[in-house]
Structures are given as structure tokens and as C-alpha cells.
View 1 (cartoon, rainbow, N blue to C red):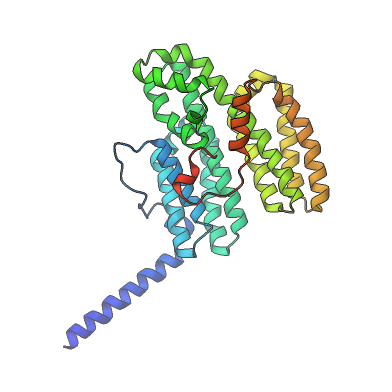
View 2 (cartoon, rainbow, N blue to C red):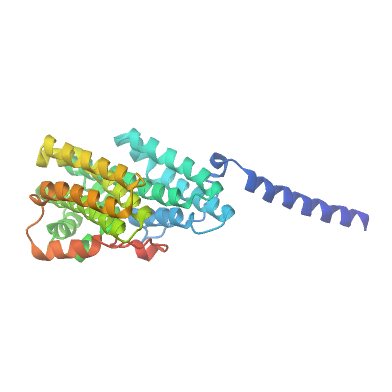
Length: 320
């Protein structure tokens, strides 16, 4: 009888110690220990993994400390399993940015600085975009259809490219799947259309910042300007080659100014005026290189002005 009682007390005590230690664990100790993001299936591709990572990061701002840390751990594990190796290969600086933001978010979760958590989520997401873009570019240059088709679903999931029939990339994907050698034929077309998507996204985010300032939503303005910068960072070398180094630097300097303006603490009316001035500088530089197809422009405008924060996997498809 006494032995059973002692064993029961021991189990209860051990459970209490485990829970307490899990709560008290340092941020880096909690990373990667909660592999709950699901098993692969024949229909699972890298786009699904990207969406799961973003869902986990989003949920870190919507749950209590314990579950926030679990979600952050899941996000970090997905990054390690599916993106980190590529980051170290093509851009180690991006890997460092992502690791730093994941670490800082663990601290921000602890102190409930949820605005910073959300901002870092956007930075992580858009830095992964850069890694994916660089891997796609490398695959196109090397004529590696297998690698291209492996990485492309991230762009499809994020931007919903297949919904726009005006884009030649959709035909290219279908033909490359049937005949991998077609990648050489479509290489420049795909590069050009992906680059244009990013250019449009940069301008769209500055527009979002102006709208947010007009509505008194300072945090949204801060987020939008940071997304614009990291979108720019994703394609900087290619963008510079298309529009010239001077124009690329003009876009970069103005986006950095927009980031500073959003965080400056000035009244929203002043912020709106300053951001509107920046937008007028950035738009003409990019506009010269936009697609002339009205359907494409209308589609992109509709898909790029959304401001809601997704919380489920399905919400990511074709919105970001």
C-alpha cells in the first residue's frame, strides 16, 4: 500500500518537474523539440512545408507562452529540415538573419512583445523567399528541372501564380514537367515574371504602409515597410541588372527611409504625408518595368493589397 502511494507521488512529482522545466527552458533549448507538423504524403510539397512554417510562426503570437514556444520550435524544425541547408549554400547571411529572428522571437514571446513577434515573422518569411528565389534562379541557370520543380511550389503557394492565366510561367511549368529540357527555352521568361511579381510586391507594401498610416495603424505601417525591404532584398541583384544600379539604390534608400518613418513616432498624418512622398519616388522607378497586360495588373493588385494576418494553412494560398 505504502509502495503504491510512494510510486504515485513520485510520478506526480516527476510530471510537475517536467512541466516546470519545459516552461523554464531557455529559448534555444525549446527549439526543434516538438515535431508535430505532420508526416509527408504523396501530395506534400515544399509549398505545404512553407505554409506550415508560417502558420506555426503566426500562432506564436496567438497562444499562451507554453504553446507559443512549441509552435516556435515547430517552425524552427521545419526551417532546419527543409530550408537551412539551401540558405547556407546560396546565402549564409540569410540563414543568420532567420536564426537571429527565431531566437529573438523566443524572448519576445516570453515578454509578450507580440508586435515584434509578428514583425519578425514577416522578416523570416521574406528571407526564406530570398533563399527560394536564389535556388530557383540557380536551377534555371543550370538547367536543373528537378531542382526547379522542387522549389517552385513555394512561389506557387505564396503568390497563387497559377490563378493568373496571363503568365507564361504556368505554361512553362506544365511543359517542363513533361519535358525537362524545356527549362532552357523558358528560363528567361520565368525569371522575368518572378522578378516582376517581387517588384510589384515592393510597391504594394509601401502602398499598404500609406493606407495603414491614414487609418492610424502604426504597427501595420511598420510591418508593411519591413516586408517591402525584405522583398527588395530577395531580388536585389537581378533587379539592379534590370533597372540599373542607380535606380535599384534609389528604391532601397527610399524603402529604408520608409522603415525609419514608420518607426519614428511622428503623428499619423505626418507619417502618411512622408510615406506618400516616398511612394511617389518608388512607383515610377518600378512602373516602367511592370507588365502591360491589364488582366495581370488587375490580378496582382487584388492579390497584393490584402492586409489580414492568416492563421490557417489555407489562408496562405495565393495571398502572400
